[in-house]
Image (cartoon, rainbow over the protein chains, first blue to last red):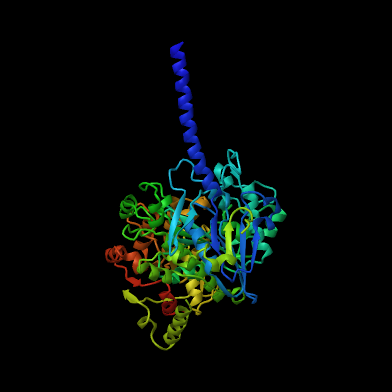
Length: 422
Length: 202
């Protein structure tokens, strides 16, 4: 009897300990899920819409997200910038935030989505031990941002199928890609929540008559398409496909690949190459945006060693500084696709600055090829940020504005999946 | 950005009046000359051949479809070579892992196609110009696709042109010595815009 009682007490004690662990973990998950980032919008932001304005069924879901518009009022090209399609590639988001806080538009219109897969930014990578947040050093202390996952949070879309079949190409993709925004284009108005977000982004491009659409990503340096522009050489003959179901590829009216190649050749501040979007690989922005709209489309990749699989511990320092001896060894053996130097690493400012200058290079070259898409815009660029870094100042923090400063009160914006009262 | 475009235009204007090689950052063997029309193709299905097509267009001296042609696909490029109309074959060597995988052909297939391209060009007495101008189109690993394409094309080339960054290990210089092929080194791909009119004569 005594032994039974002792066992019962032990079981209760173990249960209590487990519940304490679960509660601690639960609080951390809850914090990550509900953490709200605040930015200070540039005076040139003229309108804020939501993805649900372009696909109403996204309203009140975790895939809804703000869409910012900076319209100069002067006729010119329309540029669309997609940030955070894969939240675990955070330089994409930081570049979008720096654009939103510093943009000046003199001609044309710029549309920016800083957290395209909001849901995916509210969880960590399942099975990987890595930090939830990173902090940017600023003049007023620091600003904290989420890292996130590659996929839509399973809390918002579950279960995954055995195989994901992309619509309308019918191409089979990996099961988890049903929650991968950059495998679900052109999306479906009545599809999964991720497909609906993809559809809404397509609708932004179509309804706003976007001329230049840029998707910002990061990639492992063990992946061949790192440090690369990807753009299509040919586009789908939509009329023929809709009539017959046959996929044939034709010369586009405006050639994105030509623009990307000139941009890549002209950039000498950092290593950037160019790849043609394969006609037969579906669901990705650089293919489907071009196939299902009239925009010139570009995907940009920066080198993010944090998501390479053979690094040391995945710490905030690894994410922010990108210094890792294992990858240096692998690079020395010629196995990576980026001239990695551990002394310099691949710091966050460098990757963010690459996106800022990479996008600007595309916008400028597109205007040189095609007069009518000219958009005159400015935001911080690589050279400026590099100079600030040389002074020992965090250049991302330098260009961020203090959301708590009284003079920024009117332009504060909380990034969340629904409007937040000021 | 604007400054660099203006600088490019100024350089191009000056280049009209003065021999172009003086301004292009070129080293190694002097430029060679070939007649038009010439055929462009890819060695490895990378974007390099399209990049060179773009630079040929930028030179404003040649018309696609008359002075030069671009064909990366097999067997279409065999037919172009077999036609006997072309005075030179330009192979831009760069492998796309993404493209090869997605297109359903392997590097083995592409190497096989390129061997046949070389055979057919030789049968037509078409000189082969091997060009390496895309960033990262090299590897220190011998079995890498880019290196295999170089091994397939360069020994059969009449002339090798490479950007300096792709020859830091002297690979092309060595190949040139081994097979007695002139090797010309350019600093950047954009330099080609200035010298292409000196290379291809209409």
